[in-house]
Image (cartoon, rainbow, N blue to C red; front, side, top):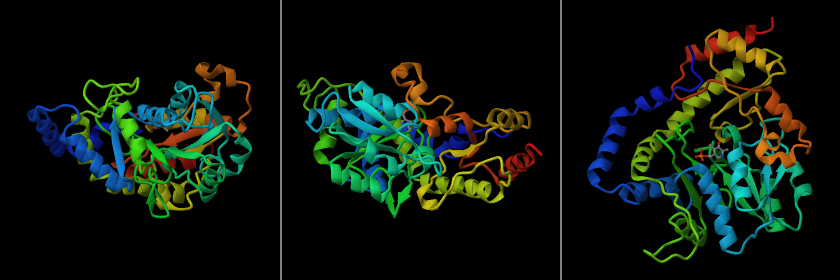
Amino acid sequence: MIKYLDLLRINEQHAGEIEQAMSRVLHSGQYLLGEENRLFEDNYSRYIGTSHTVGVANGLDALRLILRAYIELGVMQEGDEVIVPANTYIASILPITVNRLVPVLVEPNMENYQIDDSRIEEAITQKTKAIMIVHLYGFCAYTEKIGELCRKYNLKLIEDNAQAHGCLWHGRKTGSLGDAAGHSFYPSKNLGALGDAGAVTTNDRQLAEVVRTMANYGSSEKYIFKYQGINSRLDELQAAILNVKLKYLDSENEKRRETARYYIDNIKNKDIILPHVRDWGAYVSHIFPTLSTQRDNLQSYLADNGVETQIHYPVPPHKQECYREWSNQPFPFTEQIHNEELSLPISPIMDLGEAEKVVELLNKFGS
Ligand SMILES: *Cc1c(COP(=O)(O)O)cnc(C)c1O
């Protein structure tokens, strides 16, 4: 059986160091907002290349806090619009609507399924205040053109970097390309904790301060509350684990890329569409998406032959019950992706033999 993602084996590679880190936290007596959190924030800022990191409880909160901070700073207000890719995971959209901002969905390109930068300008209105790009599947979504549009229309650029830790755009890390970025360290992400965790990165000191305050009940001084905040902290245990795992992120991403390269070079079935990878630095292979009009048959055929796959994602945001008011908006590319997408196994611990087996099965499919 080839698992889609074997989290146990991934984490067991670092068992000794993770156990030491957990024991250090246990015996420190400090379980929140302590040394491990500070250390992780420094390490992660250095890694991403921003002057600030604020550890928070999860990736959804990271994005929610960025938008909330912009509202508190007067950069945007309720009813303003945020452009976001239509085919993203729901956790990019929820932070927009929870802040009573309005998501404006834009279709993806069909090369690597990132927001189609040629369709953004027509979606900009007087109310647009930000573009949220999502580095979906671990591909860099940023383009020169997106940067130009942000400058031309004075828009904030927010990155959802939940799936792309370590991804590069011309030598710069995603998460440092815009005004602020939200990161998730959910266990299955490329940099995964052993529970929930997240962070905001930014070069904007004022924004970082408001996010930090807002995440701590709205307080930066004990028992003094400036905002009606929330409780969203990165706990010491997860920070300590992330300090261990961050050291291995680049080499683990490289292992993921090896499998992705092998898939691209060796899958020859014309009925299975592979993503275009123009620049391997700009793809950290979080998910390896394929498209097939036979997706459901292909998935059961692989399962019958001992290969586990996943679908990212079966139902797009505009077809979800929670956003039923959008259900009649046409997003044909997004719907095609959701109808045809199948994600092949990929992980830092997959070996060549496993990738060979997957490829062999795919090349035999339908013949
Ligand atoms: C995982 C994910 C999130 C949310 O992260 P959580 O830590 O689970 O809250 C946001 N956006 C994208 C694209 C994700 O994949």
